[in-house]
Length: 386
Ligand SMILES: Cc1ncc(COP(=O)(O)O)c(C=O)c1O
Image: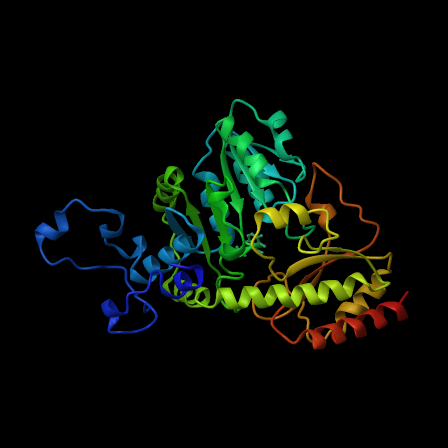
């Protein structure tokens, strides 16, 4: 099956559900068995019937995400951050060491610096451009190498296959936050990743109206992740899962349009005198472009921007007056967003001093002429508040 067909059909079984196209919302805690024999029968994970272990609503979503990412199996979590936590906790314990990319999502860093530290797991943050030299940081007790590509504030593009090859040779498991690319534009398991993490809240749900996470695994890692999730009682409600399942059916058309729109806006921004640098690996001028082109199948709508030196009042006036760009911490929905980021506060192995304020834009599905006009008016306000 080709990818667009998989997205449309995987995990759907209308005949089992009154012919409904989408797998319905099953609300369940108690699930009844037909007989003592049925109740006692040895059970596979999906037959251990109890609401917390999932219903056809959950299985449908697990199956389509797994099919799209080429995974052995998937585990659903109530948020992307919980997906990060479950994935990491599946592979570390007291006395272990984690290598985490310096550009990891802020709360993933917090997990490392607080909870992991409390349970006796040490974390070393590494330069996203480290490549195969990561070998110099691997210790005998390094269990996990945690990457994100690109980092979603500064958009540096790590060489994941190079990092993964060294990590595997030294016995570590490679975990990746693949939210930026979505399951469509990066295939983690063919690039050396063992566990892929998604904030499904973003592109999978795609409409800014649900919190959801999902961890996909290869055969070697699946049981460990599922075991932690089962042990901790991790569960996402069926309405959220339904929205994830519905959202993913249109992910391909949305992602392709996000990419087209983002490239148009990014190219326009590159030529603006107010802009020092656009941080977007899909642009040929970006230092991460060659790796992106080699490993990725597309680029999402999220990228960064470094402005030429500007006053706080100028940046504030620019952002406050935008009419189409919303100001919000998330991304991945159909609508455009902008935020003023401070990546220097969130890294320790490397410095971020780009010589001007950093912004992050999520380019939605609006007409790009309108988005550009909105930004153009923003630049006028920036100029008027020097
Ligand atoms: C890259 C990345 N990973 C994980 C998360 C966490 O996802 P959630 O907000 O669903 O917990 C986010 C949220 O912003 C994110 O940007």
